[in-house]
Length: 280
Ligand SMILES: NC(=O)c1ccc[n+]([C@@H]2O[C@H](COP(=O)([O-])OP(=O)(O)OC[C@H]3O[C@@H](n4cnc5c(N)ncnc54)[C@H](OP(=O)(O)O)[C@@H]3O)[C@@H](O)[C@H]2O)c1
Image 1 (cartoon, rainbow, N blue to C red):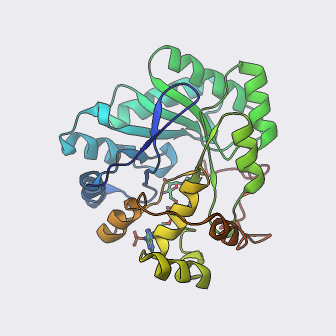
Image 2 (spheres, rainbow, N blue to C red):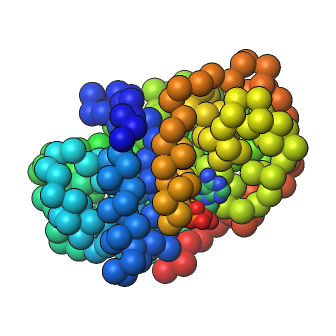
Image 3 (spheres, rainbow, N blue to C red):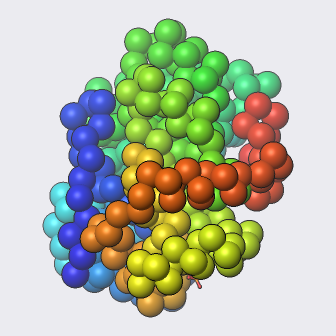
């Protein structure tokens, strides 16, 4: 079993340097897939109310037989619940569905700036943290102006910003913006969700050089940039190899070369946080 190193967040809590994405992992077979990942060593599990699978994540935790304290569970607030009272109830509902007493990390899923309720959503999360329902409060898909508003208006800096990052969308500017504010960046769709990044000749060449697979090269690239990737896999071999990325180093030039794969329109689904309105 691979032991994943921890990083420390700005509120003192720890976060494993790599977690398991769970989008579309659902139902009984989903429980088995998450259990297999737990057996391999995954402890950080990333879910969201919008994935309709908080139940599966909670069930896998219970079935694992491991103490709750070993897991770092992340869930996310849907856009339709950004108003203060709605956010408060949404947090409680997530906890009930997961069947746990507290969330380790809770994120605003998307800022939805046109609706303009994300600051009160963040305040509701801060208040839930004070009541022991959440350990770390964070955000997802936030741009610098959204970060600055929540920090200025609530006095609390998010611990994490989870954003789209993969070799076609490397996000150098946003990574620096998070780092400047002491926020840990998590990468969603870290492998590019089948967008071709894994097949890139540069990635394949590096895989040969390091005797690793292409997924491992991309995950190592994230880790050396100080990013926490949360790859999703239902495949036992992928789950296992995706964890085995803490025993080699890419060179600084190789990291720059991978950054060079960035595309002007590299987002997987064109989801620009300034205008994107999540399904609700
Ligand atoms: N905050 C947000 O707005 C947001 C948005 C999207 C996603 N997320 C989170 O981020 C997680 C990860 O993103 P994602 O699921 O979109 O994409 P991803 O992790 O980049 O890619 C998942 C795909 O890659 C395949 N894969 C995994 N490991 C592989 C490997 N080593 N070699 C080749 N293929 C591999 C998986 O197939 P197999 O199952 O066959 O391995 C799956 O089809 C999600 O599950 C979710 O938790 C958050």
